Length: 224
Image: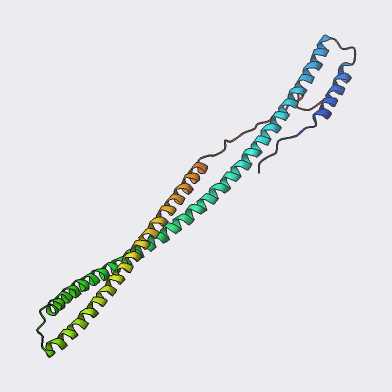
């Protein structure tokens, strides 16, 4: 347990010292006694100044201790923010991983749709070639032609639907990539600021103060 510095009532001590000096030497003291009395009173004044200085140092120490506690609290708060940012970053990393997996599936779907579109395009061109052969068609050929036209129209509609679906998928992929990019940038800035403040507070430690106080009054160590 830390011992507390002794305190004194200097006015009372000064009065006792004055009474002691007057009792010892009286009013008809010689020059030597007067100098001795002045020396004792000077020592009491020095003691008064020393005690005031100790009070000032103690107040400064209390202020620094309070400041240190406040900085420690700020460091703890920033450490908590950094931990939270780290958790959010881990969550974002997991989201990116999941997105990459989904994106891989979407890319496969897009590739399949493109293959189907190329196939439909070839079939449609084949139908159009048959349609454009000439006007001298028999009834059977006209019926076949009508059937082919219907098939071609159906394939064109299906091709447009596939194109629309492909555009939506590509738009969704682009939007998701932009959202993840924004999250990454925001988390990166937040984590950088939190770590910077955490480091500046962690290394800003207050100085240590050691106060040593000794008092001696008469030759045998006791007051008069």
